Image (cartoon, rainbow, N blue to C red; front, side, top):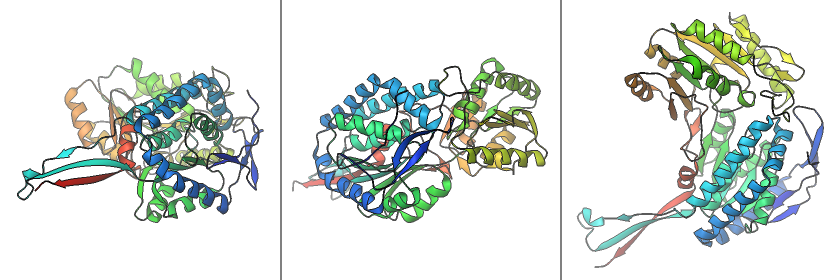
Length: 477
């Protein structure tokens, strides 16, 4: 892997030496992999001011020019895809094959953004449909908001950043980006490529450091017109309370569930569910955390699911054969072990896993879990899944809906009536029929209800969130 050096802040098109730095530690090896800037209040102010001053340049830039910049980024990232994947592995301990998939998705996301930059359009309004509207012509246009404040998490450090800055550039906005403290290298890498692609100075500013300091400044500053945040519900709710009249998109937590209906063939379902539960150590917002299986299939499902889980390989994330590696930090591992023990104390049984090998938490399958314990009712964000039985489909739907979250849910069924009925009754942002809730491609609308957030991502839908609708009326009388 290419050696990683001390990084600088990206402010107003320049790489700026910070006054303070901290070590970035590999979650897997525990070794120092880089020195990361710790931005001060003054440096955050410089970044916001640069974005504010650049908004007129971006706002006037032609759609084809914004699109071309995003296309150049996609081409550059394609050329450097393996380097990008290794950066993700180093800072996030994401297994290399999963990191390669993330880079491929990131390229696709920027291509979608390039396409959407040329599709932003309004409509004509027939004012004469109302008495008094005769002789008038009306149309709408979508205008950029100005400065977008983007705050991103560690689990998809390249693609979730793309879902913020891609549509922001497409719509002619400027950005102040605060990536997760553990995974800033991916953002700096994309920043370098965007500078090379010709993005105007100040259009993207990348600042790292204290989340409370930088995040609070971004949320409260009046020059920033929108906050787009992916992270925990606690922080998201705090942002919503502080944001005032800013536009806010929040992609928050989940304890995603799937229902397995009676009569479903388990041959393809079980490997798919294992993938949904344990990919990237379960550190995915729509990771499969709860599985509800019809009582007629339950025992067989548990037996085969456990057998498939035991095939997963634990180890170095750079090894292409590795399926599961270390969680993002040791504190998270300790937390999850406590949650597993709490479930056991409440009567749950561990069918496999539950222990830590070195610094890797084994993929863990729990049964007989009370719905009130943390591994069931909160977001575990780790390689832990619970499997429970049900007798009627309505009972299964009620259990899925009995959650503070509502991001995505899945149902496997051979009955079209059951599929349509469950899709209507599930209170979530997205329903996946005959698939796991962990499915996502980057042009679909993505977001949740309840404490899973508000607003939608997916480039076309983010473009709508990041523009202001203006009405223009000509009086011909």
